[in-house]
Figure (cartoon, rainbow, N blue to C red):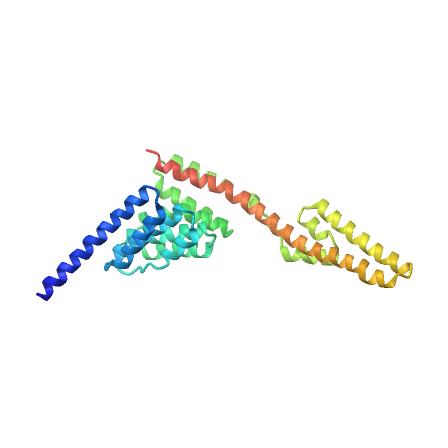
Length: 289
């Protein structure tokens, strides 16, 4: 009697979970992502089998992704236990986590998920599907040589036409030529230049007029300080005039740091965005019949 009772309860739970999952799928297709996520959460809570629980968590993460709540999607996927999962489901979970982390600008976590997928899944044909995403992640981490290698491996594995392989690999080599890799400014060096010679940090970062203005303002403040002292307005010279110089000097240092970071960000974004277009076009090509 005990065995029959347990089996009946287990079947009822499975039947209920299946119904909840179907309802969640239906709501997701209808664009009701928040409500669908609640159903998938209930499935993950009630599920006894880890496969069912993992699938539900991935679907709940998809609901957050559809709403562009990348941080919440990443948190949901962090609850997955990878024991006794098939290679395909492990890949689905790892690659989805990597995608969420990438969209959430957590590139260290994103990279680690692809590496783990590669390490624990022996079938190359499964984990190599994540290589375009892997290349995007490596680009953001400024690991451009590794990104080039990953893209070429993906092309060689997926493309069957030798001529097309050669063509695409040549394009990748050209995109990642050493002369095209962004030359980044040293932020601390720029600040030290401005400390020693006001305005020189801005000039180093490529902002000529900002550097000239900074030098001019600080020279005016120093000149005003000297003028006050010369005319025996010692208190005014020591407080107002020199205080003005200090503000211009400190502001120049902060501005130099900002400009160095801005120049680096702009250089990296320009480089990575152009490579991103190539990667997305490569994926679109592979989807074409």
